[in-house]
Length: 163
Image 1 (cartoon, one colour):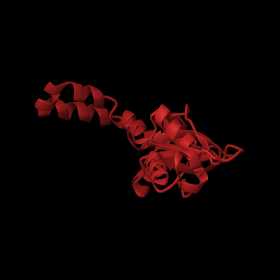
Image 2 (cartoon, helix red, strand yellow):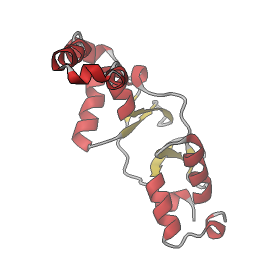
Image 3 (tube, rainbow, N blue to C red):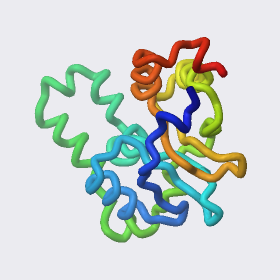
C-alpha cells in the first residue's frame, strides 16, 4: 500500500507571501492544526502549525506555565497576557507574512512511498502529519500518523505495504 492510497488530497494551502491575517483566517475557517505553505510552482516550502502561532501570540506561554506563582496571582497572570498581545494590531497582520512564521526545515514524503516509509518518517521526526509530493516536489496531499495507522490496521500489513 502506498502513501497516495490513503493520503488526504483536499488540502488547504497558502502562498508564502500570504499575510498573517490570511493565515489566521485559514486556520479559523477550516479548523486546521497545520497549513502547508507553497511557492509559485506549487512546491511545499514551509509548514505552519498551531505551535508556530502560539510562539507569535503567546511567546511567553511556556514561561507562564513554568512559573506557578503567576498562576496563583491572577493580576500578574493578566499582566503577562496583556503584554503579550500589546503591539500586534491590524498593521502588523499585514506586515507579517507566512514566510516569516512558517517552519522551512520540513520533511515531505513522495506519494509513491510505502506506508511503512511514511510511518518511519513520522515516528523518527516526531511529526503528526507530512506533506505529500509528486516526483516534481509539487504538493499532492497530506498524510497523518492516524491515517497511516488506520490503513495498516485495516489490512495493509508491513510486508504488503513495503511493496
